[in-house]
Image 1 (spheres, protein in one colour):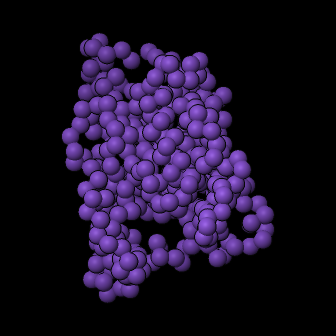
Image 2 (tube, rainbow, N blue to C red):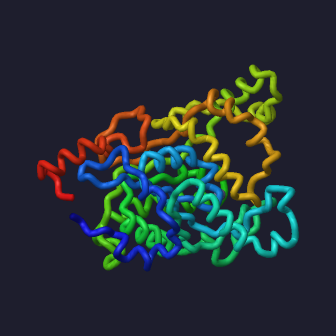
Image 3 (spheres, rainbow, N blue to C red):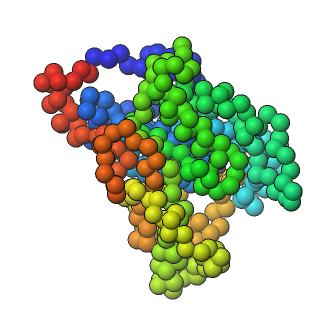
Length: 336
Ligand SMILES: [Zn+2]
């Protein structure tokens, strides 16, 4: 049997690992070699893991998948978006508070998480835009940033990675940078000539972009609110949002996860400085979210495994039923 990698260098590279609740679960599916499935989300700030893909995360954790979130920055320059938390004592301790919020979200989602250790670039505002702050993530040397993510990939050995699209999903410099380092690290982690001496090369099977915030979904939510006789918080947003069929065509993979929307909401609320419980997100009843758009959506950007789109599972082409993986191992066809 392969020695557990938890005995090895994880403590060196991933010092922030908390409890491992997925280890207590019996996995429904494994990879063909009989190993537990592993999913790595790369996010720019603490809270992004709870607003993008969090219900898919909860679903996969419930199925016994190991989910790791790599958080690029500490979110130090994020605004306080919850009026109830907009206080001088919170602002003075924002780094510590956001770490504590992330701890709570991590426990709610049942995931592992590692900080890549970069400093939030902030969202530049004004005309002309001000220069990016010295030393922030968006101006960090690309080789250094990619290298830190390569370390995580070679240690965690994900079957699947997710990140944002090339525009960052929205135009925050840290989100664009997150995309850049994720795509580069996907390749570099597998290249024996890249970052030598820093772990065995690992080829991740698939890379996805989060695409859930597309117009079609908001149209469906808006329609469901009106149909239910409720005031839609999306009317104004939609009025200024032209149809973008090209963007919508990018969706290759829709993961049904409505049963886990409540977990997603709890994780999001754990980021109390970043989410207004009275805001538009929570003005739409859970039941309407579940009925109007029961999936989280992704674009399959890269795949080194055979799969066909459209898909309904990030592990399509990788996962096999646990019983089948066990049978394969028993017959000695694969080494575990
Ligand atoms: Zn963010």
